Image 1 (cartoon, rainbow over the protein chains, first blue to last red):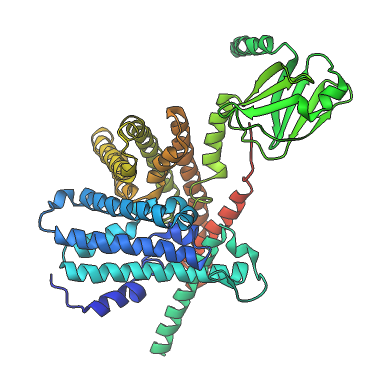
Image 2 (image 1 turned 60 degrees about the horizontal axis):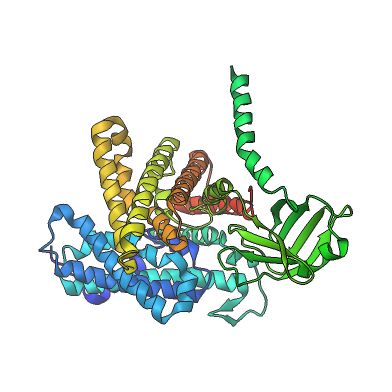
Length: 204
Length: 312
């Protein structure tokens, strides 16, 4: 199956129409768990982007050598290898950020989004297209995490990226861990509402 | 019949407890943690009040590092002089064994006792902590994909929870074995993730094959979810936490059991709510996932109430 999309289309698809967090509703755990600030979201997003791009390219390079029956274990091991790389690199060079993210960096290995992209895209397409697709999906995840982080940081501590913007703390509740569920739920509802509104206005 | 069994049980418990009473029948008859930064000592006979009130009479340290002496803030003596509450400047790590030594004025050691929680209590606290206080779904935010995916019906939720618990316990014990006897001796700690995820996939595959042969009916209802189990962070989180905290095999078992039970509990609670949500009149924008997230958020707030729960 040849891919007829340009690299730009592949990237925008990952960010907008097939956004991993808001549209596909995959990899929700970090979106709820550690998106308390923009910076946390950004760091984990970078880690996921790295793992997604490199495992996509690796699988797509070796796609003809992998027997279909053992493809899932192969994907898992490939992802685990790249997660180990980013885990050790972050622990060595950015120990502070690493400590904040805790166990979630290691848990990238179990993110459904990465395995799904390998299964649906990288095992069929060329390395170049897989690279762009991985980049798009990773960026989509990154943007999603940062948006949730932005909402929570702004509402919870009245700041963006650690800088005080509002000068007061509107709703302390939003930096509490359990607020992650509420924020994600409300944002999903918001996107649904936009979509419904758009459809209705086009019809009427 | 039942009464006699109960009597035997009580006698057995007393026999087990007896040596501890005899052993401690010296200067200090009882010692225990009574708070986050407090140890309660009960003396066999009243001490000299001035000496018993003096902070310098006591020397307290953790058994594992005797060089670090813990700082005492004050000692509160009960009016009859039999009980002393030692207040510490910093919270104690009550999971560790502490040694309290009592000295003369010239610094000679008169008596020393060990203060520790019972090991069974410690194991139970790991279980309770994984089950309620640090519930994997509502407090640690793990395994949400499966949590939202399979909590639509009570029956599937129950089945899924049971499958998860089994896979978790088996894979955690196996990972403990590999970690303790292969990864640590050969200094291969950096392979943690690769080894653990491999073991988890192996366990899932094994459960899949065994279930298919042994109980096809059960397989037909659970088989679909088994694939989901592999790509799930709850399962892989247990071995990673085991490696982080350096648990032994019994502690690992308790952690896995608590985590699995907590997941089962979360799935069951959520599915009971979602079965009713189907009948409720929800605004169209909130239908499906958004309302489930909000319900989960409310559960998470309720589970916040368990924080600080200490039974033992």
